[in-house]
Image (cartoon, rainbow, N blue to C red; front, side):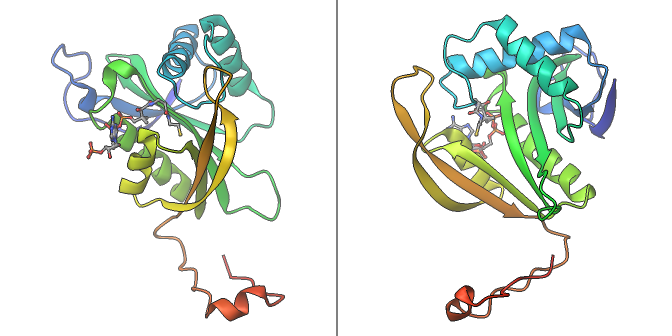
Amino acid sequence: MTAGVEHASGAQGADSLTHAQATIERLAPPVFNLDLRALAQLLVDAVESGAAVSFLAPLAVDEAEAWWRRTLTAEHSRAMVLVARLNGAIVGTVQLHPAWSPNQPHRAEIAKLLVHSSARGQGLGARLMRAVETEARGAGLRLLTLDAKRGAVAGELYRSLGWTMAGEIPRFALDTDGRTCHDAVIYCKELANADPVPPLPDSSSRLEPGNSRPL
Ligand SMILES: CC(C)(COP(=O)(O)OP(=O)(O)OC[C@H]1O[C@@H](n2cnc3c(N)ncnc32)[C@H](O)[C@@H]1OP(=O)(O)O)[C@@H](O)C(=O)NCCC(=O)NCCS
């Protein structure tokens, strides 16, 4: 059901496994109902903690599961879903969405980075991000983008992993209460080991037509 991405040291199934020893895998169809339920519970848990992950509170687990089912079975989807497992149970996830547009074959968006509240603060979020960046690099992608709620702890995580703040968008989305709004920070990261992209020579040339950079 899964293709290995990153393997933890230590014996699987041992009672002594910690969250730092979770295994990170790529989720591949067909996806077990148990996994779908766990992914749904992760989403509900994130919404309950006030995370900006598309949904409003309260989110019913059945609604969350239906969303995951649609996402994972969408025809023509090129999305890649990674999961972190501990003793077989999914405790974290992240998605990579390659851009659909023909003029952005090198770009993908990162979405739905979720670590269960019982497993946070132990490095799983960072490991998931590193793993998805490695997968992206392996797939030949060179530019990753994402958006995050301004002030959310995820911002610290992205910055610590070398992501650059590209800008902010005011009142981007509703908070989980459905009433107030929050700003979004747009982050980007050019992947190492891709061919170097030469910097623009100077600011005066930025408005010149034909100012393209080789991929
Ligand atoms: C964001 C999230 C994925 C982080 O997962 P995590 O496993 O707790 O993160 P890690 O333990 O790997 O932490 C990595 C870094 O993130 C930052 N960070 C994580 N939690 C933090 C907190 N509560 N306060 C401040 N910084 C924090 C730190 O820089 C940390 O590095 P450090 O441990 O060296 O200080 C998790 O909090 C989560 O699932 N939140 C709800 C969903 C969400 O908001 N997703 C992001 C959508 S853009």
